[in-house]
Image 1 (tube, rainbow, N blue to C red):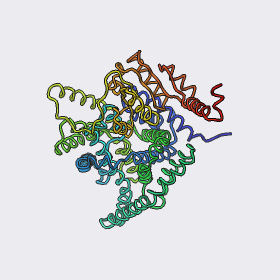
Image 2 (image 1 turned 90 degrees about the vertical axis):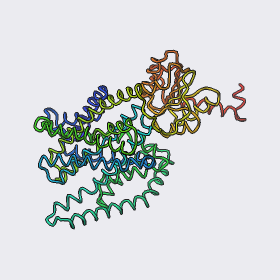
Image 3 (image 1 turned 135 degrees about the vertical axis):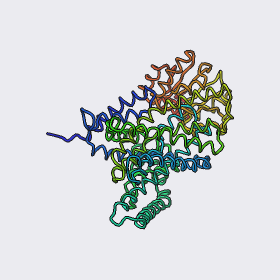
Image 4 (image 1 turned 180 degrees about the horizontal axis):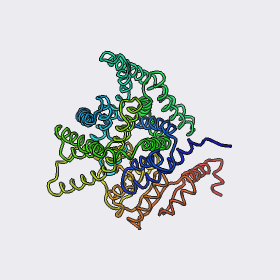
Length: 557
């Protein structure tokens, strides 16, 4: 019997090719997004061989957009934004304006209508969250003042793009009607804003209470499957309901669902449980975007591609540099912000897709945006490498004024210390016990909240992945006595164990595990011992039982 396997084809082949090319890009120290986009080109209609179903790809990409926006909302921090509001808000708006005008000017030279130029310019004005956060985290800049400014700047850009996604359909509809004009445009925009305000009011009044309440009740059942299902149902359900009932975009609904979940005490669990599916559909989103890219644009319109690339990497970056300097920040901070923003990504693709769908952006514009994104994401690591070398020379020749950072934690020990990797449930219990018994302790954790909790408890902590070479170097493992891996991810733990063993062969390495297979894996990667949590719990409970009066005689026997 013949079965239509188009959906299976695009998921299986798309993810497989994306994995191979994403891993290759990562090996070349490029963003995996480059690999995902090229994977889309490989399975797209513009290259020979396997061609995935474009209609199904578009629907899967819609799911990817919703889950991407849900993730943006889930990590949205008003506190982070308010901390740097005096530069991030006016600076981001000014930079978006300059970049949009540059994009509009480029579109004008190509003879496009003004609305096409507006969409094109907006798409070139917003940086990729994924690329920016990875670059900052690799350089340990997230907790510095310039890192906070970059993140706050990005939050403002994201909010402006969310608003653009809501208003562009209304603007396109008003301009597309026979009765188009100033009044019609104003009425369409006003009606859209009114519906958006109604949606926001419902979400803040009802959703703010209902969503955390539902999650708390589901979490109380102890079923991880139900909790994960509840998170995804809320994300997709709110997105779907917002479109059906209020006429706003799926993206806005998913963003608000994530933002309200962010206020819940269960937000971290929600983020962790939804992450695998969110990542998978996000990859499919980038693959579907790559499928739309026609590589012939590089041959047919090379000068327009170059101009688009320069608008992204030079135009808006120069604008950001002068804006930051105008606010009195040092040159190093201005360059960091400029280089961070010298690329475009997911929001640009969403805007381009919306523009083509509404017939307010030609397909050539979408191809130019995709080409600019690919080239700018490839170039971004090289720009950061140049910045690293420049800052190193400046530090040697004439050090820049020290930047104000977040309140530092306790000083880091440099020898004879214990390294505790992970400050979650296990690490946060272990580290204080060691410290109270006179053992110098240093914590490594990639979660900012965990690091801040360690600092509040008087324990030195480094933020970052322990598998990253720079992070490990800062912990001085060559001078440590012991390292305890209290993280629940066995693959990351195994990689970290191998690096620690290579750096210090005499270092005692201990790890936690959840199964006999994980124990074996950790021991094979250099651990001196691995604690199986369930087994240790069983031993402890047995000891407690045998210490009670009914069974004390059995213990003595």
